[in-house]
Amino acid sequence: AIYKEFNDYISEAINDVEEFSTIIADADYFKRVNDTYGHLAGDYILRYIADTLIGNTRHSDERPKDLIGRIGGEEFLIVLKNIPATVTLDRMNQIREHIASSSIVFEGKPISITCSFGVIHVSRKQIKAIPCDKEKIDLFRSQIQHSADMALYQAKEAGRNQVKIKKFTM
Image 1 (cartoon, one colour):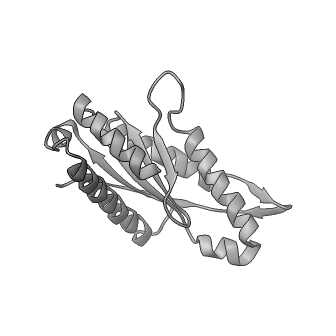
Image 2 (image 1 turned 90 degrees about the horizontal axis):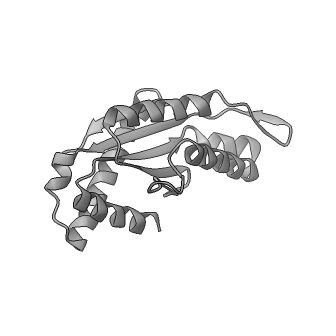
C-alpha cells in the first residue's frame, strides 16, 4: 500500500512542482533483540519505532500527511512532503536521537535500540524533469527507493545510529 501512496504522491509532486525527501529507516542489530528477548519484544520495538516515526512527522488533518510504511522486517519507508533537505536532515536526526535515548521496557526488561537512516532529497528542479506517466513514476519511485537504500547502507557501514543524506541523481 505504501508504494501506491508514494506513486500517487509523486504524481501530485510533479503537478505541484514540490520537493520532497524519501527516507529508509532500519533498526540496528534488530536480530539481536529477537534472539535475546523474543519475537514479541521485537514486535513491541517495531511498534515503538513506528509510533515514534508517526509522532514526529506531519500527520494532521490540516495538511497532506507524510507517508510512513513498513517495507521489510525492520525497515520503514518515510516520505516527507514539500520539505527542504536541511529540515529533513534535522528532523531525522531528532528522531534518531529520540529512539537512541529512549528507555524501552518490555515485560520488565529494558531494551536499547538505535536506528540508521538513509535519506534522498528530490529537488523542485528534479521533479520538473519527471514525466507524469504511470510507468515512469513507478520507475522513478524505485530509483529513489534504491538510492535511499544505498544511503542507508552508508549509514550502517559508518557505524550505525546515524543519518546519511545523498543527492538524488537521475
